Image (spheres, rainbow, N blue to C red):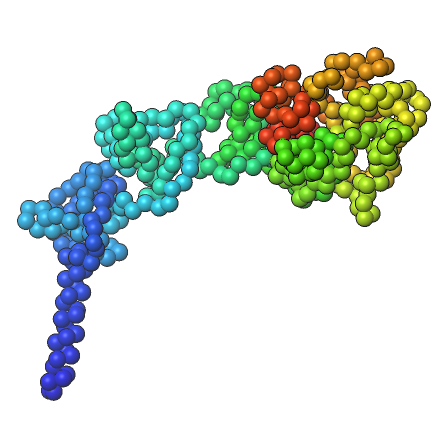
Length: 454
């Protein structure tokens, strides 16, 4: 046999020996790995080949930890010697502290326990703390049953472990309309309150506006109170998804004086509406200073601009009309419901409404009354030269919509952003009528809630 062949045989045998040595000594890993016993008792064996009937060096109780070095997919070797020699643990008997990415979750049920170890078998001694109610925290996956988290006790942070049954994964927040699937579909005060505190009960096909929250729960508001609905009782029913919407009105729709973007549509309640209700787009046909009635000094009344709604021969799925406040502010006579004058509020609103019904019979039409105004020298509760205040014009809007069977949202009753509150006026308005970006965002959310709730 040649020297070269002997050399390569020796070299191959040496590589095999080194590989086996690394495999069973664990030197291939730079650091130890902590494991947890996930059975009531887990044995540490003298040899990885002698599990059945082999010698047991040590037994560890469920939840106890041990430092190991993985040597293959089946066996882990102890990082330190036991009774003078290394031991071996079956990988299927233990849980490795080799966690995944961080995920936001919410506690659910009556109580969510945070333990000192996964798979605890020591009862109360294994418990760090109990979370009651619906609270957010961060977890990292260990296996399908257990997740790692962190707790702070007396100012010190500890690693804790929580069972998968104790929480629900958070989902991206998005506004939706939900439809009740059955009679007695309940809104609960908390996710832990199943069969306990019910704050509202809905019948089958009733709808409620809310927001996605977790994989199994959604968050809603009932009379100013936060509640929770379960996915088994409700389904998403986003009626506006994919729809084309037109918003028609005056400067409150246009977005005049919204922060530094004066007189443009960059910031308006229409800016945020598509995200709120799932619409594909909202076309903004608001014009600053526009009134419903025709006025001699302007050419931009609702009646003179009505054809804008059907630009390019389009027929929108939904038409939202925030009726102008300028008829009241600029002393347009209210007129009579039965007289169709283009220069009165009643006559102009009826003419405009009949145009919409005639040209867009398949569109969903929704009117909204103007919001409360506090911009001296004009305010909602002062009277114009006819002795009328803004509420008188709002009543006329409601009468017209009722006559034609059109849905009307009374925004004058909305007190969420009341400009007569000095703090609210300073934070959300630029002048007591037109809002800043923060105000328009809240206004959009309120309009969305009313649109989706019906």
